[in-house]
Length: 228
Image: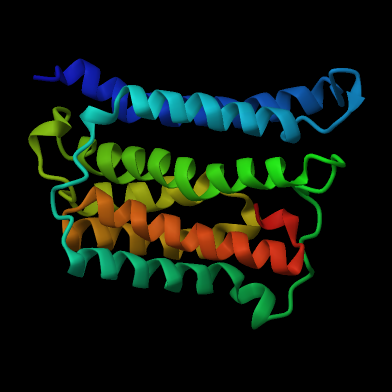
């Protein structure tokens, strides 16, 4: 039997480590650190892969704390994929419908000659596997329920009230860049609705992973690295 304390760490820990990775990037840039192993290199190119490895390791360590089987039906999986595709459309709408300026500055996997395939693989692992797991475990798995009841594990996945629903939407939006706030706000609503409708962590992760995979392909096709 997994203790409530351990489950709390399992649901919060990966997200905290992920956010610390983002803070580390900002901190390194503020301190003017622009090299790695003596080679000129922006911190995102070595901190993000390290962040991915650390978060993946923590997720594996706590894997038994997460229930991916509950509600993991074919119908819920299809709903997750459909919502993921819709979210992808929302995310690129400013570019495709409103012709906003292209976002070319960001994690370019071709920046280090000879390591492009490894850089791209690390970025997709982060985008499609680690981020959906870390964020859905925290936002929908933990916070959506915790704001209803402190002992959140006693509530079924997808449980919420009006306050927790909108608090998660707003917080989820706030951790994204301002340019993505409209899409992030609508995405937060949709992912919350998937949680409420399916009662399935798996469906939420699948929706998030589908959206991110489609976005990753779009990024590579348009070279708009700022979407990462």
